[in-house]
Length: 273
Ligand SMILES: Cc1cc2nc3c(=O)[nH]c(=O)nc-3n(C[C@H](O)[C@H](O)[C@H](O)COP(=O)(O)OP(=O)(O)OC[C@H]3O[C@@H](n4cnc5c(N)ncnc54)[C@H](O)[C@@H]3O)c2cc1C
Image 1 (cartoon, rainbow, N blue to C red):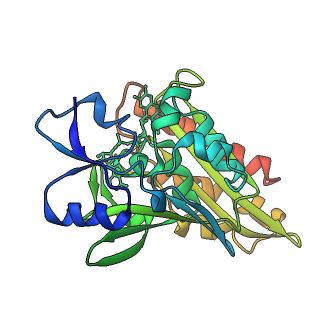
Image 2: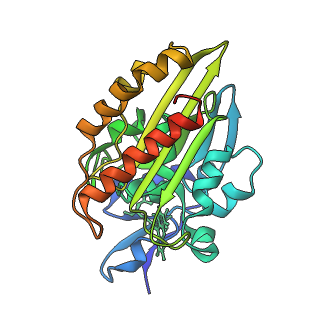
C-alpha cells in the first residue's frame, strides 16, 4: 500500500511539490521494485498537461507522463523512438512505464533516454517558481546524479525531429525483449547532395551516463561519403579512446568491442566503407 497525492492539474502538483517532501510517482515500474512504506508519493500519471504529444515546427513536445504504450500507438512518435520502446520490457510494464520515469531513474541503461541523447533533446523542468529548459545531456551529472531540484518535476521532453528519419538502432542484450541492455547504440546520419549534413551517435549501458560526443561526430559532417571513408579509421580511433565501459555482468573488453563494431556497422550502412 502506498500513500500519496493524486493531483489532477500541474499547478496542483507543483504546489504540493513546493510545500512538502514527496516522491514523484509516474508508472511506479522502477519505484515499486523497492517501495518505501514511509514515503509520501506524488502521483503524476493523471495530469493531462504531462500526457500531451504536440508537434510544433521541427520540435516534438512529449509530456513526461506519456506511457510507452501511448507513444507506441501515437502517429507522431518517430520510428526510432518506437523501435527502442518496443524492446522495453513487456506490455504490462509499457502500459505503466513513462518516459519521465525513465529519465529520472538516472540509469545509462534507460532505452528511451538513448534516443533523447542522440537527438539532442531538451527537457522542461517545472516548479512553482518557474521553468527551466535544459539539454538532456546536462541533466545527467553522473550515475544517478541529476540536475533536478527538490521542488521540480520533469514535465516535458522536447525532441528535435529534423534528423531522425535516417537512423540506426541496436540494443544488444541477453534476450530480445525483457533484457536490461548491455550495450545500446543509436546513430543518425543524413546525407544530402552528396555530403553528410548530420551525424550523431550515442552509446548506452556502458558507463555511468550515456556517451554522446558531438565533438567527435563533427569530423564527418560536411564531408562527402568518399572523404568520410578516408576519415573512417581516424573516427573509429577517436571513439576507441573515449569508450571505457565499466565492468558489468559482461566484460568491459567485450562491450567495448561490441560498441566499436556497432559504430562501424552504422558507418557501413551509410555507405562509409
Ligand atoms: C521487469 C522490468 C523490465 C524493465 N525493462 C526495461 C527496459 O528494457 N528498458 C528500460 O529502459 N527500462 C526498463 N525497466 C525500467 C522501467 O520500466 C523504466 O525505467 C520506466 O520508464 C520507469 O518509468 P515509471 O513511470 O514507471 O517511473 P517510476 O517508477 O514512477 O519513477 C522512476 C523514478 O523517476 C522519478 N520520476 C518519475 N516521474 C517523474 C517526473 N515527471 N519528474 C521527476 N521525477 C520523476 C521517480 O520519483 C523515481 O525516482 C524495466 C522495469 C521492470 C520492472
